[in-house]
Image 1: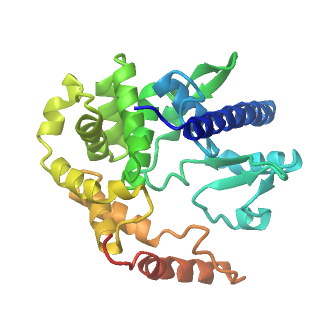
Image 2: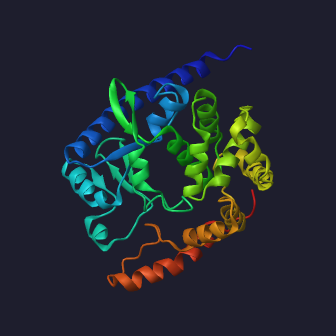
Length: 322
């Protein structure tokens, strides 16, 4: 079958645009890392070009729209001051940082460019069922070479746990996230599966790992690693969650599950019922910037924001099943 020349030209143009975007974002990443390093702020790059390099061997092989860095929560205020002084615009104003409110992420833009990046901390990663052991993550930190420069990253095993939780956070609505899991398993036989299992237990994400592996096998024919087969086979919930994911995966994120299905999915994903209940409760009542009010009475407004969040979510996801 011969493809139309116009279609091939379109693909080439898209690929060219993505390559240019990747080069620009990589240069921006180096600038951000240099600013943080000079200030003595420890950081690790997650997802984005690093995941593309680790999973597919090429930082431009996988599409992404922003950069993500992990740092300690104790460093985020100083990091924000440094980045704003360097010309970046912060979505979270300094006056809000002073109140101690925690956004979903600390988002920054570079004016007059398409550059967007996010700082994450152990407190913004609320989709981890339990708080991440940030000090252990930084102790296990390593580096990859990106365009000839070393870039600080999480260990391969910690990154794997992160992308499995990220996929679960978004209900595995996109095949790209399943492909990332499959590529990591297929291209990294050195993955330490006992360490991944231990890391998942630390943050209450055991079932999230199992479901990720089941999805990679079901859709992309990447077998579940032998070290994980008994664990996956013994978890009967994985098949039920797979069935739910199959119902919304074809919509590619354009038809989010309704509220009841979202809640049930969140409840089941961690693995243990008690962890699932705590996880669902925290996600239902922990305000993000979408819930923040302008009430100057900080303590009162936080309570209002917390109690109002379930109603906002109900309104947002009250549509019928796709």
